[in-house]
Length: 194
Ligand code: SF4
Ligand code: SF4
Image (cartoon, rainbow, N blue to C red):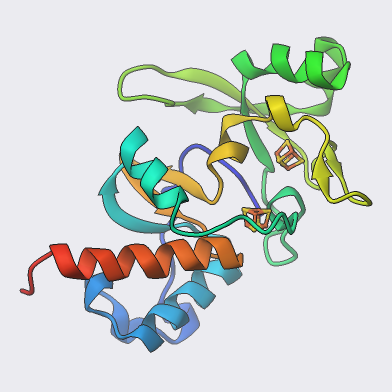
């Protein structure tokens, strides 16, 4: 799967025989439709918008709506998305990754491909690069990240990414699914019926 700062890709509902959900608010979907929506998004490796602004408080709250099982899926390729560019890393993060991995910057640059100008905050833009998948820092035998203390911010925030200024969640693991279900339940209570 791919880990990135921005995610503006739209889910093709018709492709998944879910065209009848088009135009509906997520909070108005039945629990069964929510599960179908998550299955479709997971198959296409698309993050689902939560309809709330990206902010430190909202991300912190959303992260607490589930628990990472350290399954490693987000550090490995998604068979359904062979074209995934990988794990997005801010160039500014390479020094810390180099120190943690003891891989010189020059080699890290060779291991990565050039990304876009990503937007980490409301005003700034920074260049990024892509780490390939499977991520070279995933220790598959011991089920851990070799650079855990210095891993890219996208890894620390996963299963979240930004869709414009809106918080979006990847639902291809139990953690992401729990977060989405729980956040939708909460939003149903605070957003009035139409
Ligand atoms: S965030 Fe999800 S996919 Fe990644 S390791 Fe945790 S449970 Fe697995
Ligand atoms: S840096 Fe670590 S957490 Fe991030 S994709 Fe690689 S192995 Fe996974």
